[in-house]
Length: 500
Ligand code: UN1
Image 1 (tube, rainbow, N blue to C red):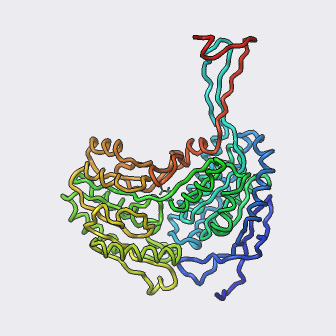
Image 2: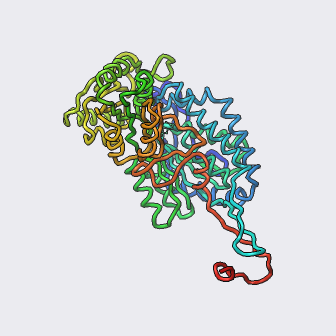
Image 3: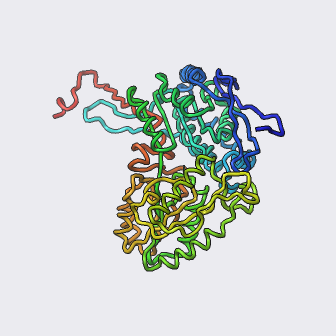
């Protein structure tokens, strides 16, 4: 496609330098709200590029692991300060490259700021345990140790926040990194890496390779010198990542899909629940792993809730996220639009009631992008595909329920387990739901989105593989425990035997 301005080509960042890809090829990153706007050209990396980045990270690791953690923390702290200064510019670029509205892209940069400050603080903690030994004159403690080169593959929907969730804990723990950001939104990752570099991260400690999954992601995951892999994306790709990690027993953290639910009980504050359902269902055009794509509503309030929900959904202003009056941006690309359209057809065919939406928006300000109407299906049964599978678009399935027990059964009856929410004014119901919802995150009187960086993030079942991001949980993933015993008795002491 012809462009008005000469496209800027973003290169790989390897061993402290911006370098071409060995492929000599580049691909376009276009604005999903206006596809004739070229955001930039990004190089298409190959296994050779990845190999060079891993070599640089492995070399840099020798020194970086020995830098005292409080010193590493100072660099992260400076990076956080730079992010604060550039927040507005980074948010605008992010909206241009992946479409979500400015308020949300500001939030995304803020999440990276929060994570960076938080992990900088960890530099003076990284606590282990000291504990009495069972034997006299013997000292026992555990301490964390860094692991090595971490390979990271990150998605386009939180293109700065999620790379920061992985980079900051890995770096503060003394690891080095090769990051492969999503093909659809690499610019935000570039900004993050640039900031880290300006803040003083030494050469080779953070490397970035752009490109697609098969050509750049797969060689990173398979590389023998990469003992740690952290991936956020779809469950099918996550399965491939896990399989690639298995032969070498790599540490592998997977953050994948969701089919999150908001439960609205008959005693809920309906105004509050409506606000939550709109934000949870249509924020980021439903393209969040935490999106509320199911709403289970008690039969006693079903009619009122649904009619008010439709009114709100219909009035959402869809358009370019850079326009401050826009409430919902586009889908990321044509493929995602096709996926959403095919799920709407599936919903219609399986007998769900299409209450609003169901069409691509292509008139007026939506003419040049991948826009879709906020869409609501009513009277869904919990086993319908639209109520079971992750759609990743502005499509909400409303399911009538008649008790809390039934709501919890519906909530837990999907293959995913990221986030769940309940609206009720009854403290007993709130705590019962908190206990029985089998998800990684539960909200009471708040929607399914809104995770904070100092608490563990992740989910059960096909959402994850038992690890958590953010908080201390992330440090647990990016370090290995080392248990240290120091015997100062000057004689052989046999544990479990001499103290029997
Ligand atoms: C994601 O959807 O991939 O809680 C991450 C939230 C955000 C993070 C979402 N803080 O929705």
